[in-house]
Image (tube, helix red, strand yellow):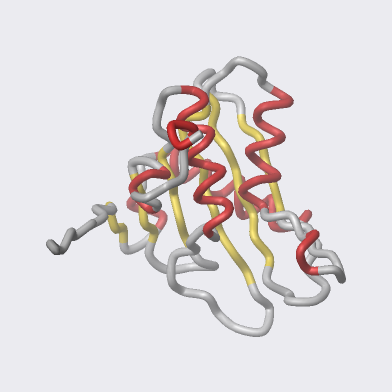
Length: 160
């Protein structure tokens, strides 16, 4: 037996103000998308904004349901909106932020496993990486060069 180590490299910024302007603006759009979050049960609001290769943006916000498995994550809502609004165009980046009125979230928001898989599938579909910009309600920002960076053992079509 041998042991294998997988590691991830992220860029860490102390605040959003340190980000390149394009990423800072995309993160602000994700923050604005929080207004459309429907989270009456968890009160955990998630907003996502996607930057297309041509500069257009698509938004998403989480949509909860009393039957929890039917909830829609902001990231997958935004990915679906991007594909429908801008067919045939590649996604360059996705910014994700969160808000909970009950507590301050000061660490970067991380996509759930399903959303990580959906981002990796989109990267495979367009044959190009998607940069992830992650922030809590405030505080530091993490930037990952791709979905694969945060899901190194993703499931892919090669298995099928």
